[in-house]
Length: 196
Image (tube, rainbow, N blue to C red; front, side, top):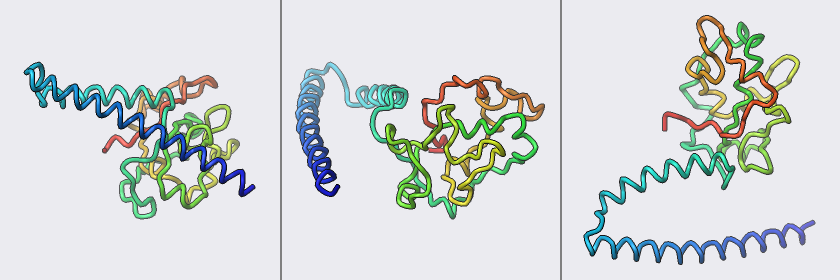
């Protein structure tokens, strides 16, 4: 087993080294091109920075949808001292929403990973593991109870369904969004902390 693990690490590190070389080559071409364009007065650094920001946002969304790369919770908070927990009386609504929030994927933090209690999807590191219907594997489906409540991640603590029409069309009137209850509901884009 140890030899197989070592072979896997050697392969991973060799690929990382190749990717680093390719990235450096691409960066050299890109910076050279930027310098030439600015020297010739065809663009300014300010214009480039503004465009870079716009393109970066699009690429982040595209990579999330295509499940490219490793996602970790950003920013990272200590979940045990987290102060902004959403307080919602789930007991009175769970029969309607069927724990719809437990179908929202999210990235775990380094703290979650080091603890080793919360399971992540091996095919999408480090997104919370979900069952075939998209529910968090830590949810007890019959009772809709969290089996790891004490260890739950910051997105679970911070998430406020009152503000999310993915779950509620009208929170006050208890009108659920029927889409969240569909078996084929798209649950591919990980939740991100919108405060960042």
